[in-house]
Amino acid sequence: MNASSDELLREEARLWAIRVGDPAFADWEGLTLWLEADPARNIAYEAALDELSAADALFDVPPAPVPDAAPAPAWQPAAVPVRRERRRWGAPALAAGVAVLAVGGGWLALDHGSMQEYATGPGQRRAIELADGSRIVLNGGTRLAINPANPRSVTMADGEALFQIRHDERRPFVVTTADGTRLIDVGTTFNVIGQGGALSVEVAEGAVVYRGTGAEMRLDAGEMLTRANAAAQPRKAAVDPKTVGSWRTGYLQFADTPLAELAADLSRNLGVPVTIDGRLASRRFSGTIMTDGGADAVMARVGPLVDVHLERRGDGWLMTPSDGARP
Image 1 (tube, rainbow, N blue to C red):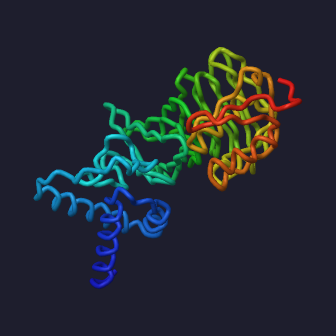
Image 2 (cartoon, helix red, strand yellow; image 1 turned 90 degrees about the vertical axis):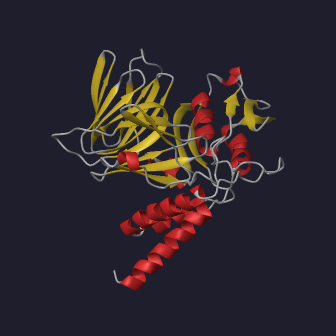
Image 3 (cartoon, one colour; image 1 turned 45 degrees about the horizontal axis):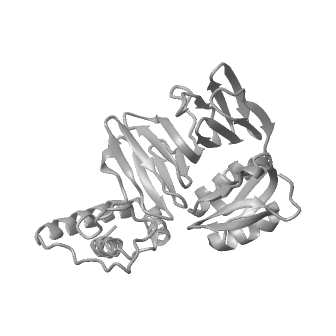
């Protein structure tokens, strides 16, 4: 890279850093594409953020008050200043081998002692790139933690994530859920949903070894495991490998799924609360729901497709039995 191209790269990075510092910034997809095109861009972007932060520090002027009528962007964590604290793309604390990319929103990485924690709000998605070439994509409402000293050890508190793992026989990649269940990769692409002890694991490539309370089994590509709670016996079933992690491309696939789980999936992907009436507790659904067009458009399709009536409750929806529907 010659001097003129170096200067052009620095200027592009500086412009991105300035734009990201604007509370109204929303072009996270554009920033993602720009950064992923060349590793040098992330370095230049970090340098630009450092320069702008240093410049901010020279002026101890409080930020202008924000009018009450201006709502905070959905991706901005509450109470996080956006003028003096520049939003970063990389995570310096993960120099041992983990970098963070934002997908559809800002990212959050919290250092809790020896673990690095990542969290997404409802409707947000994030990707974590590991130094060994492995990749973790977080769906909305997900929390997991990575040990920087051993990035191939992940603890998943709750939510949904797709793991695309570079297999290493000497250093197996292990996902530990909140109840202590261990999922060990065998050269794998797999999707995990965990919530309150309930668990779903779907394997698209390779295999996963499940080790839970009183049970151990291997899941190969095209197989899935479901468990109602931490004490329940896991059940194995078939799954189409092409549908694993389909939420990333705007499709939610369901196979004899309880409506409570369907509602939780919609909440994660749409960023709004979706709940069900107790009379629908035994109802199940099989089919595909497209999540394009925004929450209102999606829910307009869900009602007739799932055969439920939808009631607006605050900023979300409640599913109730439709006329003629039987719980």
